[in-house]
Image (tube, rainbow, N blue to C red; front, side):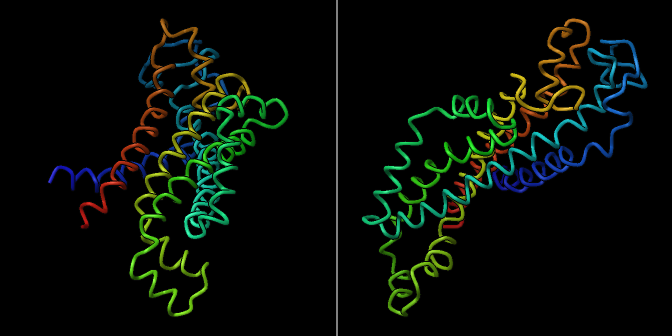
Length: 265
């Protein structure tokens, strides 16, 4: 019963958190870029989380600071997932002709760590573009391998043989017959891709390759408020909590997705 309740609560919690991250700017009580108090002011009635290094409202900056980070991570994760699933389906259905090529390409791309790749790309590209490209280049091979391996286990299923006997085209079989059987796996991998993209986007922003001051951004707030953590700890904890919560919810959703087929069986 507890597992069922958590399976129902986790998607709702994820929807609420990600919606607030994307639309929170419109709920900010103050301009997130304008000073409203003395720097490092502690929480008061008008400032529930106090002020940051420049005297800006921490609550307003937290509410406004997730849109760019979450938006970039969602785009990066979705792109990597779509390409990876497509390659994995093709490699799993045609293991000799396409599988070897996908395997070779994956070995080549995985030879470079995702963070190093993102840092190199960030020198020539914008931080957001670097996150998307690095997520695709590093995440696509992993998704493709997992999907291809799962395809191999269901490739000889009766319903797939029936589709072949009906004369359906290979691509139609992949999309209509095979992909629905992998929905739990794909959902779980989507959570992992999103966590990776969040990590890359946060790291690049902390290192100065993301949004620039005075833009509100959770990762940028971490680097800005670290020097004054002793004066106003809330200025540092406030952006760290939603970042951690987003990652934990993604992990929880991925875990639930892997268990759904067992529960349905």
